[in-house]
Length: 310
Ligand SMILES: O=C(CO)[C@H](O)[C@H](O)COP(=O)(O)O
Image (spheres, rainbow, N blue to C red):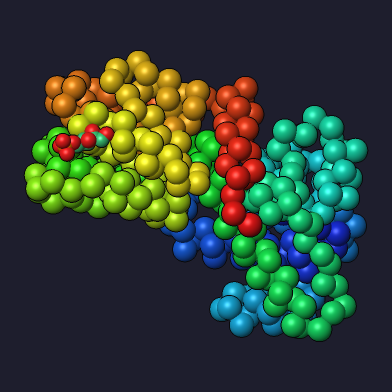
């Protein structure tokens, strides 16, 4: 079933209408399927068109906002959404006043994306201000979609995802066998190398795999070195990556269920192929449980954000 993200501003003719249309385009560029985007205003005139400057700013990016018509925010819209992103804290407060029980899924776009700034209202300004607003929205929406997809917003389905693999020389042969196994099951796999048993450096491949996931091009990764330890340490330096070095299928399931791990690392020198495949299968077929674990995974993300270069 599709997930739904609702953007909220005041009149639904400028910020949230642009956010809805931009998010649709960004999700397509990130290869994200299964997310529906909608928008509404806390004080909208239902049926009103988007402002002329918003239409122009988005038309310059090849996005048609001409057909948009404003909608008034209703409790149903909030309840139906999986995530509600408001343009300002005042909008968030208005929703929570109406529906305090929605607290867990209503955020300002800035706080959810990690930029921590409200999106200011361009209403009545010249088109240049709308262009800047569209840029600000784009930055925030990209980060928000990364977070939404990595924190269990989407259910994992093996056949629908693209997996990325990498290894060093010690993990090369096991990587080849795992790739074959996955491809035989119809799973799309990207292989970032290495391509032989010649000695090489595991951080190079950890970075390549981490960046594929960070960009949204792939949803999960598997990295193999001699012990799995170096790969886990290296790839965990990429923001948004939660890698687990696993030697047992039960732990592989827990790494997904509780920690929403998105990268599995394996130690080829300490695992039989049979055991490695059992671990891979469990890792890829277990879904993040969310609920109390989501709050904890969000705290891991908050640690990353605390030390991010600004
Ligand atoms: O496990 C690893 C990193 O954690 C590497 O595969 C291992 O360090 C490579 O060692 P060598 O160069 O002696 O083959």
